[in-house]
Length: 336
Ligand code: SAM
Ligand code: SF4
Ligand code: SF4
Image (tube, rainbow, N blue to C red; front, side, top):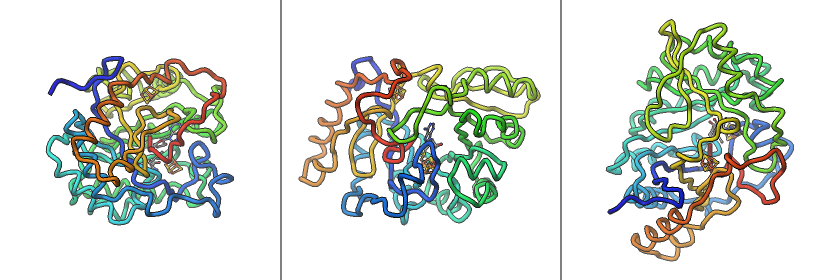
């Protein structure tokens, strides 16, 4: 089969699967508590893809060229028996990288069973070690220790080079980027700073709240000198740096100031089975409907291939500081 390419000659390589729209955090940049309150109605069970449906679609995506699968959410560890899904996905031949992004709150209890189920790698989100700032960034009140405990449990279970994602927001946690760098220096884990993005419609994004990647790197460089590293592969979202003292590697995801749409090979499957070809898309294609109407694998494959071939997305390269006229999908519905 010849490579499936979109209109900008980008192949399909990564699939991000959101397994739940629920979350036990209320990060203001993703699910602000004033909107996602107790009365907020999340998807009913019947609308959520089953593990069988997810696995069937994942196989089709792999047949079309996907080699990397990321399980995300919402908070994926809230999905009951997630290990069962991980085990199914890990058995698909052609999946070279199976990874999960979590806020870490439930990780201490889950790390070993996820490893046993065949999960290759982990990303844990942690925006600050300082409790007060952690609470502000996560909308919780328990401080960062529980997440740090989750990371320790993951190390013990055998996960190495865990990626630690930290969203940076000006005047909220940017004064603590050095603190985070020092915490993970010499641990073998890879801290990655993410520029605050204008995902969804509800986080009051403004360009003034974005700390440019170059500034974050400069600040760390003054304390822990760095040098750039080559990308591991084409399409890697994080720019890599290493500490000159041999203390390890960090990354920076500069989706706002240095967009990387040209190499974007990511497809996203929402909790209710819609396919999105961009994090900032307003419309997805309902694959669940096709699945539940009894579509054959060949039909689903053609449907996905048609969507990918028509793909033109390059939102980050053309974004402006204005609120877009169209509504966008929310981050917790399709994951990061
Ligand atoms: N709940 C899990 C977690 O937080 O790791 C997985 C889903 S979360 C939507 C995936 C990633 O998106 C997290 O690392 C989070 O920090 C990031 N994220 C969410 N909203 C963001 C925003 N507005 N700008 C940049 N990154 C964001
Ligand atoms: Fe939940 Fe992750 Fe969104 Fe925070 S970023 S609210 S942890 S889904
Ligand atoms: Fe990919 Fe869309 Fe992000 Fe560009 S804006 S890198 S096309 S997800």
